[in-house]
Image 1: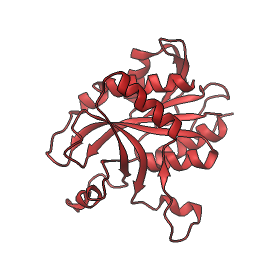
Image 2 (image 1 turned 45 degrees about the vertical axis):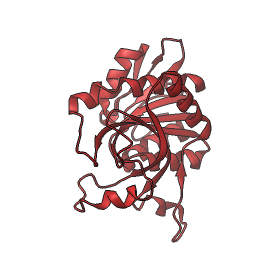
Image 3 (image 1 turned 60 degrees about the vertical axis):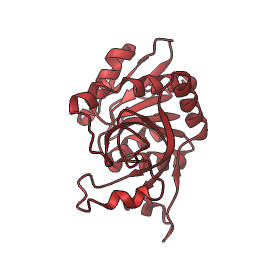
Amino acid sequence: MPTPHNSAKLGDFAKVVLMPGDPLRAKYIVDKYLKDAVLVNNVRGAQGYTGFTENGKRISVMASGMGMPSIGIHSYELFKEYGVEVILRIGTSGSYTEKVKVGDIILSMGACCESNWPSQYGLGGATYSAIADFDVLSAAYEEGQKKGMKVHCGNTLSADVFYNPDKEMWKKWASLGVLSVEMEAYALYCNAARFGKKALTILTVSDSFVDDVILTPEERQTGLDQMIQLSIATAERFA
């Protein structure tokens, strides 16, 4: 049954969904890595496809858009209305530490946030710790090791503000061991916990706050194949 943000029918989505932020990246993944893919949603350009991997596993790919409100809506509907069991967010991230270089991969074990997102749960002054599913995290780490990839596991920050006027704010998070910043993992992990589902955020480091190295927009869109290959190998374990 369609939702306000998804025109797919029940059963159109596979049990496992890869969620890049960018619709163009979603299309790139489908064209390069899936067979017999079908477009099942295109509401507001949040393209969703379902197809088969090279090993015959049925998975879906859907763009989440940018920020916690956007992935919050889409992941909520996928978990609650479409029977999706696992969502792997795949995106880019800015490194907060010298040990995590541009091009490395981060598996987000847990997500901090600086937004009002947790207030919806009525916890008063408490802050909810949003974490990845251990089974999916372990599977992704094992796949990364098998493939010889440079993979880091640790805490990340889901920020509401991309252009922070406080240019030194990142150092405070770095001092607490936070590896990098992105904008979606916290909301995804909260929704997964709310519905008893599984989620993991896999990130390619696209820029560094430490040394100002940055990928171009073209490299962000099509140059993230290691992360995509890792996410597909992980998804196949749960498909």
